[in-house]
Length: 295
Image 1 (tube, rainbow, N blue to C red):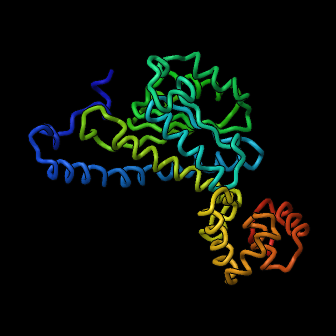
Image 2: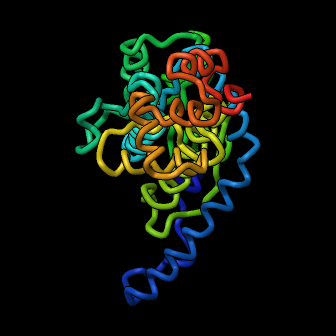
Image 3: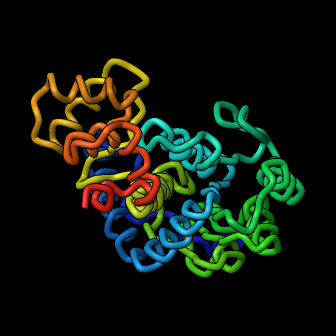
């Protein structure tokens, strides 16, 4: 089966990698990488459909759940762990599952990606419900762990999305929405951590960021639910409040204190003159959307 997969094909431009100079190889690799964004763009209609599914899940207190094996699983995990500090989501709201468990993030667990049972059990362990959206990621599009997970999610009634780097993929057939990106053969044959991994990262970025915009986690282009977990983010939060309200540094700092270090609340307080308590009521009524809260 592998000989029919684009991700396993040999790239005609790189048949003599071992004879190229370092600079010659890097130029070719850079030119091949440049094709990835264009390939992803071709799938924007499908990505948009997936965003709507994910946003619907988040609105009803469901979850975005990524699952994959190897590089694909690591990319899903990476996107998941960045959501709480960026968007103020609860750690359990965006979940990353990797075949073989968390330890597989830093060391390959042989055979895990071939386990149908693991794909199902991992979703059972987190108590998958019909409110959730499961995004299965598999560069080859044929990973049993992911296919089994998507099929189980369909059975439960959850929304399902597949991200693959081959057309007419098995994971695509197992999902309600198939995002299948044609990046062309890798510069190093079969090394799907390269163009395939890059396209998967771009798509996960799009899915989570666009979905968070849809559920009120962004005002303008500002991440207004950012968590103030270190000095850099404290300063970023002050700049966010300043940019959103055109106030000065001291005012932003003061209102962040009054708003219990919540940039979104500080912004609404400054723009409306409301107390913290009334602001939180307004934000609850507006489902977290600043524009609705300040009307």
